[in-house]
Length: 235
Image 1 (cartoon, rainbow, N blue to C red):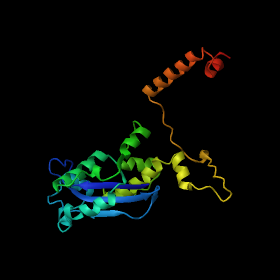
Image 2: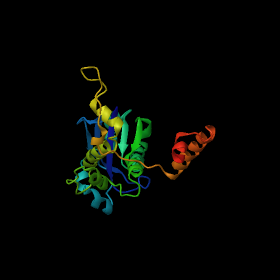
Image 3: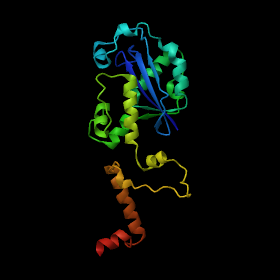
Image 4: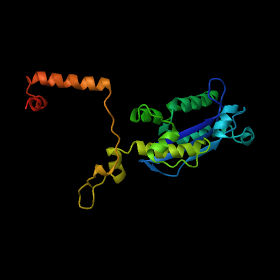
């Protein structure tokens, strides 16, 4: 499976109000492994960044003056992303900017070109409800070294997010994939001791718990009170 972890930096927060992309960073994963086939562009946005945005990414207007415009890198970007699963932290923001840039060129939306979008922020909120789930917080929580991140940068953030994503999805299926699908030399697949790993535990929400109780009640009724859990409770 080909996955691309993507991040952008922009002149501000609103593509609809004229803000533009100034940097794109992409990191490629094949079968959950970093390939080194990354893509990185600085882009001349044809406008200045807002002061608040400059404080976030530190990319000066002067630095971007001689960089290519989005129209000049659009083809290479589309070819690189085509049919891939694209992983983005807070995906609606970056997808909105990419779609706006393509719309200005009369080109179709990015979502018609890529395979699918995975929002790692949504994943993090499901795994760590009620906690801070920004990139820095996730790096700290999952043991990813972000000591070099003093300012936001699209390629650096994409590299950090790739490590975060791999750590967040390192469940049983991922461990099997990492070892490879083929059996060992003796024809027997390797057994994995999952007790060695710190696996996330996802608690059922209230709706799921109610659905579970309803199912148990139906089974209990169908067996006329002879289900194993009822017999154990009465023992």
